[in-house]
Image (cartoon, rainbow, N blue to C red; front, side):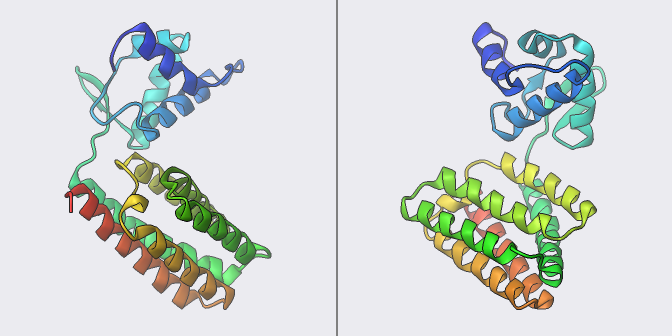
Length: 232
């Protein structure tokens, strides 16, 4: 982590307007997590407790605990006698991520189709409409945010807290990846079509079909991600 007043001020914005008594560790953890996911703290960046404590105007104790929590989440790496860095992201990491994501998203689609809670189809279609508008305006940042919202809605519809937790970790990993695949030529239209196929299967309460198209959606996402990373 680079020292300096301006850098600390930029980091402090992730902490929010104030820290409630007794929740300092939670606030510091959330702030550091968001700074990592947002790309402000990039992979392999050194995280020094004293600098972070000074930036957040807290003691080193909540910073130390926050580092431990983030290490458990796989967002930072603690090395004995050396310190803590933001976890790196290799090509192998990305491939491993998408293997897991494909199967978890497929399961989420299956469970959502079986449960199909009231309003789910309408909710997914509504987000899809906003995604279509963002795609028409070539607003990749907005489209990416809406894509996450769509997948969260699907995740929440499963009613499975364990799956929700695992997919939450996957979302964190995906957010760390450089650039959005939705900016790749033609990908936005593909995503809209793939999402619609998932929703239509859910609407029919066809769990097997929903799982199949959701997994195909993730396989295509992996292909585009690798193309982007390899500069193709």
